[in-house]
Image (cartoon, one colour):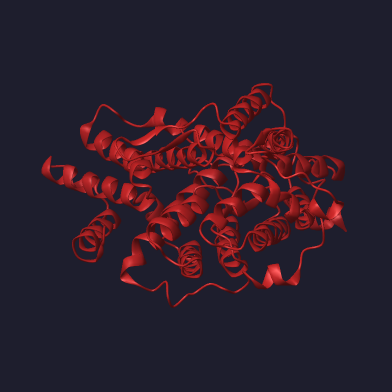
Length: 443
């Protein structure tokens, strides 16, 4: 039956290989079980409910990807979206988390429409490559800054805005130690380095005291680490999204930001994974690419219903491909393993910021790589890219960075006589951003 569903022999694989590939993929992305609820809770989402939303949305979409698409692509709540949700939308903009989830819903719905439409490729080609690359770098800096701030390595300062924190503080030293240890694991190519780094730093926090108590609370019973999730935790987030409340002019940039990154993050990830599988053709497409986009898009809708941010295809799936994963059985195994995360909500709740901060910083490091591919020699390309990158972390708002990049790109191309370089889609976005910041934005 398994052979018939996943066509293992046809793909040159076997059950044991696919199970191993699924386990390896899960280990490389399981850190999201701890990091995502921590970030969402900063925006007001109930922590235990966020854990359930994280594991349920990941499990369902991975299983559907395995059965419907039959490719070894795993999905879960994406990094960057969760930070934007918590610190910008809910934090800076003071949007209730239920309404913010409504924005995620609209992101998913619009993505579904685009994924099902014949003109999806035109939409994807309408955004300049340099802005796509710069957006990834800017989000990386944004995530890394959140990690540094949550650990106390950098702090707010009324005179200079940002200052170095108390590096003699036990919690800061623990975070720095965790960063060093996790980097070591990455350096020696340990599978699941981010996950092991979080767990090791959390356990080390039980031995480090601050203010007379352990940084990581010491569990006194098995139920302090794992237990069957409560119904109340599920109800606290399930179907709590406010779809109507998200339909405001002031929230259009938020929805646009979610869509922008959902589209290009997904396209970049699946293209890279298809290349790893050697199924990418000369046009940059591959068999069942449309199905992958559809599952990814519906994943975001599912995530918004359960109570989490944008669900996306993880580039970490490449680890499973490297282990021989060739079919959807790999993704199916990842989904089953995510379900086990149900029982570890208590453990996730005691993990301190000092333990998750290193993972955030390192995710930021990973996202810096595209900066090498940006065209820095043409000012009409480099200035918009620079503004996109620098404004995101400085304003604590990804939308502002996107707006600065898109508007400056369009204007620079127009005044230098290169209007043909600007797509119709970019003109629309430019006009919408100008209208928003002129009439609707409240700084």
